[in-house]
Image 1 (cartoon, rainbow, N blue to C red):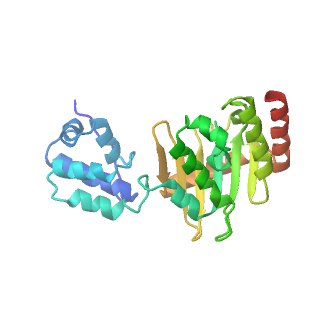
Image 2: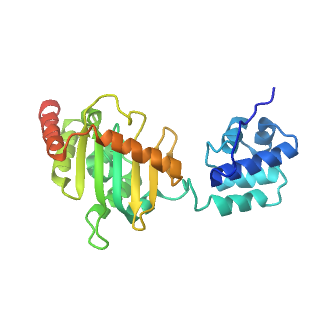
Image 3: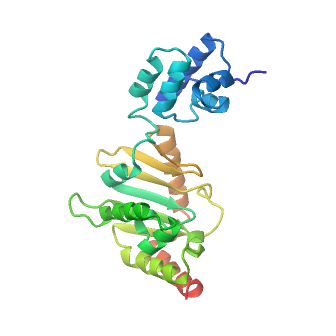
Length: 266
């Protein structure tokens, strides 16, 4: 039996409208999800996820599907008009938003935030990839810039990340010392005691820009997703505040970092 995509409300969001148009055109041609997927070079399940607004397709998807549906450019134009500057600009570089931010709210469940990593720590994480290491270190310049002023960084760090061995004791001690040094009024570090909380499913960052608009970056096992979709932002903001309610104050957090450094890495 052909798989069905489920109900969709085209007025809910640009992504819903895009998915609805793909579905309508597919059904007019009498194609199943698998048939359209085969024509366009995607799995039927992925096409269904796009139709249900569960996946943000890249422009390549719009081009391939447009051809498979003989839409004469309509699907591509819809993608360009609705999604290019829209809700999941995953094709844009997250550091561009990071650099524009006046406030960054970060929750990290497994590792030290990239903006707070030492070069040695990053080197081990990135398996010595020199270009990737240089890019990560370059991102950190926003915290020391003069014009425009640096963003305020509020970092919630799950305590489990402080126990994860990245490079051995020497690297970890240096990383701990760096956290203790960089902490300031502009860089707030809060340790979240290891327990069940709303962030155990993954790390994310919320960037507030000069015009007060927001963008979120969510880490997944496959790739990072940049989203400005209102419901995603609301969920991320609520989750951040729920986690922050469980975090230690800054002074106690720094004391906890000192203690773990002495107990675990000395």
